[in-house]
Image (cartoon, rainbow, N blue to C red; front, side, top):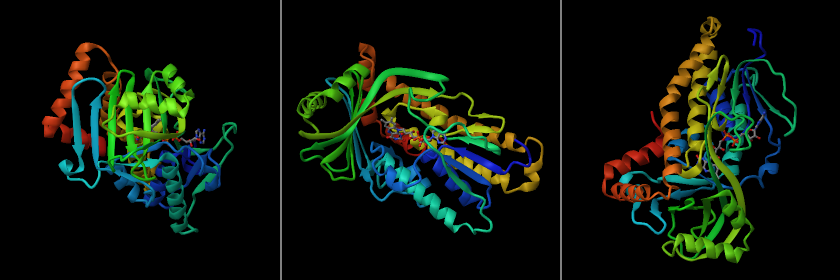
Length: 390
Ligand SMILES: Cc1cc2nc3c(=O)[nH]c(=O)nc-3n(C[C@H](O)[C@H](O)[C@H](O)COP(=O)(O)OP(=O)(O)OC[C@H]3O[C@@H](n4cnc5c(N)ncnc54)[C@H](O)[C@@H]3O)c2cc1C
């Protein structure tokens, strides 16, 4: 990096977190000399058939995405969450009324979030006075070699899935996979999410925008049994699902679009080094049990954009020795509590809700019962899930 670098900021990775970071940087400082390197196809139409897994976004994320008009059109609101454990005592019901919110969360397809952010970024780009704009959006091939681009600050937003990342630092392999798909349920309760803890891992059935009877399924289990479930005929799969879930939800009628993801925790202890910073899944990859990965990544992106806009919009201060490095260190400190709590809570849930040790089974039954009967605990947990730690 030299003071004559062509770019102030290089964002590597055009997934939801990289796109959001670019959009907030430009919104906060339109003259930013910013380049976004994106491995995804240039044409949105090529993403239309991409990853359709349902992602739970919190109300906090909605508020953030609204600031750049990146809230996708197609989404399903969650009004109630029913939590239980298969074959054991203990259950809890959380409702939007208890929390005084319009919704407890929103389910959106990954690709719709991705596309909405691309659209939002283009809209912000077109609003910037062309004579002031220094923004470039560079599309490269999936297998393109590493590019040499000089920038004062390098933002890593390369994301990735557990076991597919080219770095491994701290974390845990839960020896689990998530089987996701769309399941049709007879007379499903609309706007209700179900989370059921089974002996192999959490099983979630979440609303979708396709209608109240078509729900997103996330079934976590050992890699072997998940693979077997993937290979089952539709009829056998539905029987197995019904057996695991019981009858409370209604009758499972149809399954489509089954896919598998390996699950684990991989996170960086240090998210900055010199002029480099890591955000989103490039900083931490979480188990989806609490639906927190992208929510946390969006908070990373928003606060980093704020920091970078402040640094680069003050040319005099920016010239001061190590000004950027100090600002990044402050950014890392400001993210510590939120990251630690979200990573810790998710890891705790992923482990505790999979254990079959009797004391833990009893303990989690009691915890769910306590959650049901202690509204302040329930509210505190729900607020952490919705807004993160501030
Ligand atoms: C089954 C499952 C369910 C989940 N459910 C939820 C949920 O309910 N709620 C939630 O908040 N999170 C959930 N998550 C997590 C969520 O998907 C991730 O946290 C989120 O996708 C991270 O976004 P990202 O932009 O950091 O990374 P990614 O989504 O991985 O995007 C990174 C992008 O960078 C590109 N890229 C990679 N390397 C380069 C490079 N060198 N140059 C340029 N581009 C590059 C990639 O092509 C990709 O498009 C779930 C995850 C899984 C697996």
